[in-house]
Length: 245
Image (cartoon, rainbow, N blue to C red):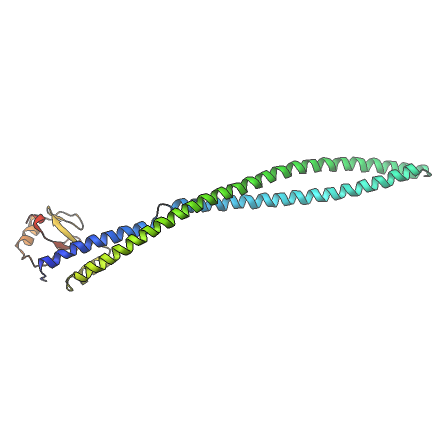
């Protein structure tokens, strides 16, 4: 295939434009904030789990405290009734003994329950502290997460603008490429390879492989409009005064 040497050199501009687009595309997919954001989201989820656990524990303690409190209230009322009966007098000795025994038992049981209530109050204080710490941690992490997301979105917008400009430039250059060369170049690119490279210092500018003397001699003997491709990577080799042929 023969294409004017000047037309072939346009491929170097296209390759440079594609390199810029590829670099920006990679940068867009790998913004530096993404990893910290993922870690912050995990930390928020973990702190949220801690908060839920502490809230459940607080509810359990409150429920148990109210149950015991209700039982103690009932005991106090029963003690008051029994005390009133004792004060009123007129009880038979056996009834008096039973009432006194009941009062003593109620007193002991109430004492135990009141101790449990004190313990529950201490537990309540502890779980409330855990809940407050978890809530504060969530607020702190969410603030960090918002800052990271803002920074990511700002950088993403900048990269998107650069990528749009680079893509437009790429399309403009591609429109100037010889129509017989562009399909070859694009096919090479579709295979994940560099489409064209400058032959410089005996090396292919696309794959960086050094060409042997026999290959270089063949290239040197070819006319300037002959389309030469790298035997190693398939890229179109562009010859200029830097090629040293």
